[in-house]
Amino acid sequence: MKRRITLGVALAVSLGAMPAAAEISGDVVKIGVLTDMSSLYSDINGAGAVVAAQMAIEDFGGTVAGKPIELVSADTQNKPDVGLSVAGRWVDVEGVDVISGASSSAVTLAVQNLAADKNIVYLVSDAASSDITGKLCNANTVHWVYDTAALANGTGSAVVKAGGDTWYFLTADYAFGYALERDVTEVVKEAGGEVLGSVRHPLNTSDFSSFILQAQASGAKIVGLANAGGDTVNSIKAASEFGLVQAGQKMAGLLVFISDVHSMGLDVAQGLQLTEAFYWDQNDETREWSKRFAERHQGKMPTSVQAGHYASIMHYLKAVEALGSDQPGDAVVAKMKELETDDPLFGKGLIRQDGRKMHDMYLFEVKAPSESEGPWDYYKLIRTIPGDEAFRPMEEGECPLVKG
Image 1: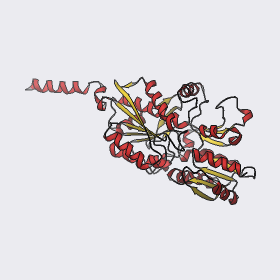
Image 2: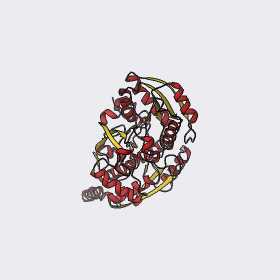
Image 3: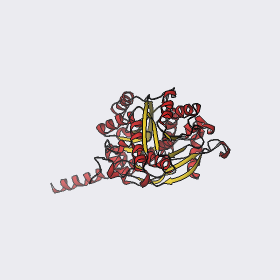
Image 4: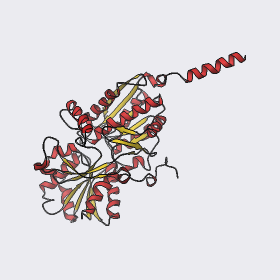
């Protein structure tokens, strides 16, 4: 009997020491990219997000813990019900282990709840609402790149300090726009400024005439654009047509991407200040990766969102490798938080307990046409904002994961 017990213990120890590859669910790590393929965020995110995810898989070696990595993708159409339906099918039927992106804050908040319910990993690189790591945080979500608090502390703070002490907002009428207006309003008031009013516009609006006229009538020094993508581009173009800047008001692009500047052109966008987490021309490493990306994406340089898909997936795969398993999701996220982040696009950083990925942010100004030395040479650096200054203090976010 004693010999049988000894053998049993030995067998248990042996099984416990088996290769980690045995714990990869379905013998494959499956990554799903949710994005906007056909609407106002397609340049920011879209097919480029899928390219970035594929590059992460290839750069990692195509396998993790001895098992292959597969990629699937889908268009959310910026609709929470569509995103939720696809995500549910992926997890329940197709065995997807991790979802990257969603296209907007509204879709993200829906998928974030599903990730917790199904206990999978959710990587957010495109949505901006600071509530993702605030009162709505969960143990399965990591928020990469930026959020509305960091955008407020970057562009909002800089503009007020430069004398822009009265504001009027053009706000996208959904969760992201509300959060961005709220967070910038707090920064403006704390700095001694005043918000004179705001107007909400539908998502993916083609005609901004009435909204620009209301902004002009407000008399505010600064018209804050609490929108993104095609809405930002169209609102800036409309403001140019109505002579808003020529009449003495200024515009603050609170979430502007390099694809937006490319679409507008430097003649229209010059002088615009914006806050970003990534710029393709920052250093040798960002340039090398970005040029590889552009070769696969119609010559287009990557946005910070697309860079975020790459970096967050790379770190996820490192955590799976270290853990020896892709399940359960909250355990993988815990390992991601334990490991220091380090990649060629965002540099060294960490993931806080609330799921917020910490790194420096940058205040840029769009160059004048005469300052640009070539295609996609659009930004000049005004200020580097340390991560602990850019992002909201963890204890102020009301995240239930944060103790004390």
